[in-house]
Image (cartoon, rainbow, N blue to C red; front, side, top):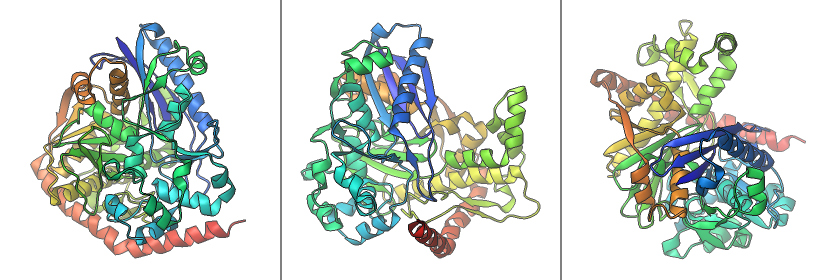
Amino acid sequence: MYVLGIDAGTEAVKAGIFDQEGHLVASGARAYPTYFPHPGWAEQDPRDWWDGLVGAVQDCLAASPVSADAITGISADATTCTLMPIKANGDPLRRALLWMDVRATEQAARIFKSGHPALCYSLAGVSAEWMPAKALWLKENEPDVFAEAAYLVEYADWLAFRLTGRMALNINTITQRWYYHRPGGGWPSSFYEQIGLGGVEAKFPKDVLRLGEIAGPLSRPAAEQLGLPAGIPVAMGGGDAFVGLLGLGVVEPGDLGVVMGSSNVLSGLTANEVHFPGVFGSFPDAVIPGLNLIEGGQVSTGSILNWFKRNFAQDLVEQVARTGGAVYRLLDDEAAQIPPGSEGLIVLDYFQGNRTPHTDSLARGVILGLSLQASRAHVFRAMMEGIAYGMKDILDTFIRHQCAISRVIACGGATQSKLFMQIYADVVGQPIYITRVPEASLLGSAVLAAVGAGLYPTLADASQHMVEVVGEYRPDPERHQAYQFFVQKYQETYQQLRGVMHSISQSEHRNVRNKP
């Protein structure tokens, strides 16, 4: 028995065929562009998504030793909150507002000032990345688009619609990005009314599906494009990082999953619903029914290193094009020669704002401590260390509020770097475990597909059978102790520069509004 998992990430969509034990049989991937019209804005074209998905699945099938007829289930995850206003037939009315888009900073600040009880999910502040802020921005700045929208949906929901023809929402993204609360009756209508979105529920699809619940059979038009048989059960997907928990084996309290991609998402499960400043959640039933999802995150992690590579390592890009190899491996080799702490260089990883613990969309990146001694290797290592300091900041917030963490399990692009993973372990002071399949979100979608296909009775059963831990990075006690000084300076830097960053960001927002 085989299943097809689809992971629609920030830079590309990936498809993978897995067997019932979670072994990857074949894969395919297609990239798509992101548009940055102004600072803090980020958009993608849904037509690029679908073209990429079709290409990735076709590439996967072409590389697969098993036939398309052997696939018994499908599911797709995607970035969140990536918001789309669409027509009744599913056609987009504009480019989607990508998860990292923080143009709605002003709306987020106003929403937070409402003080509504629904804000228990985000006690440190409302994120401009989330649906209410983005929807309010659309209503205020593009009223014609907002009025014409028959539906507001997320990326994962739109993919489920394109695969099956059924318009529905998944409980994962609407609970952790739209303030949906199933135990409290669902939609917080009084909250929407108070913040200026009264009646917005009319633009939401009526059906709300659990992760892994059948959205419908694969439609004939989609099947013909993908090269698959029509009628395969399509299980509802959700947010990529949270579906990734299933691909990491995080299905009970105590384990923390870290999905390391363009951003870092740190999330786990609690038995009870808890709320405290500095984290998001907890979100009831958002992944495993009966458990609560709790979340921390960093907006910019892998995207910072990618930015650095594009702008400051073109010589290595050209070298690799001539001789082979990997640019990041060459940068790692350079950075490995620099001692821990990068000789006094500290980087704040807030290039696109801070998600937690500050929930500050106006924060921006900082490179502190530059001297004429500093080389490219110093800056690259300091960027990796700054990202690790941000993760340590979030873990400390969890622990201060009695959210015990027994294991940290990681996946994503950063796990390909031994240097980066050792920096993470040394900074946080805990072992970091690595699973057999590094693409945990892709495997998580396969877990959902396996449950939808009836191969396993529950998400926990499927995850436990399909995920295997195969390695770990253990912290060095001396390096961990040395890093604590720099973690403290990292934290102090934000507090001391917060006002300056806000002034600059607010000035840029005014400039954008005044442009013709």
